[in-house]
Length: 255
Ligand SMILES: NC(=O)c1ccc[n+]([C@@H]2O[C@H](COP(=O)([O-])OP(=O)(O)OC[C@H]3O[C@@H](n4cnc5c(N)ncnc54)[C@H](O)[C@@H]3O)[C@@H](O)[C@H]2O)c1
Image (cartoon, rainbow, N blue to C red):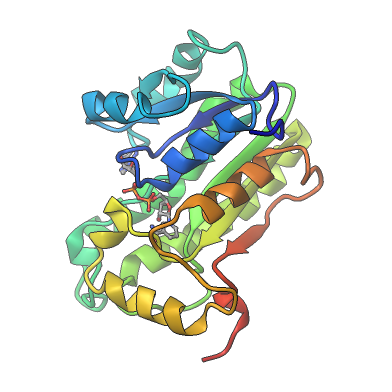
């Protein structure tokens, strides 16, 4: 227990199981003194059950990041629990199976468009939906998987992550005047629902077993979650448009 986020109100998207990176972010944020509001996509009774496993109960608000009506009413629905936000966590991604798993050359636009809308454009949608609650400034943090490289199987999700990284830089540019920072954490592979639905996910674990200079445990989301909490805190006051690698050092090594 610390006080890194003491007094801060944080909106956390992306909890679906207790292995979700967002679950560990919400847990650590509460342990560091934050008041957390969760959003859930679709399966709200499941998300509510998972939310009950947090150190403190957290309300769950429905949010499909592609649903404009839900985005438009988000600020009002968050205000039922907290009057303003100091931080927003984007921990959302999805690509149809046709756009993953070695099918790069054959994937059609509608599947690619879904991947880009849910996984990249949504950072802008979420930021704009939350902005009315961030009049005193704040910190937005999203999750990427190093998009400077092509990876086996990752395919159009890799392209969506490149779009997410660029979106984050443009948000940093346009939200800076509002006092809002926007950064990403580039995590190594973590065994979550989204990750294990990528055909060939095991290949990532092998790469990290060989190349993570300081070691990497794919069953432990806490290092990535700590990176998110750090970026939500006041300890990175002039850092924006950044990608912070929490990947055991793989980004810095050759093969
Ligand atoms: N697990 C990894 O290896 C890894 C590595 C680097 C980055 N990431 C990123 O971390 C983030 C969280 O993923 P995770 O690994 O914790 O998996 P996860 O399956 O636990 O979380 C993905 C979340 O996205 C949500 N989602 C999907 N479509 C949505 C929509 N239309 N609206 C709102 N929410 C929607 C799901 O409900 C789920 O909560 C993703 O951006 C993912 O790409 C994961």
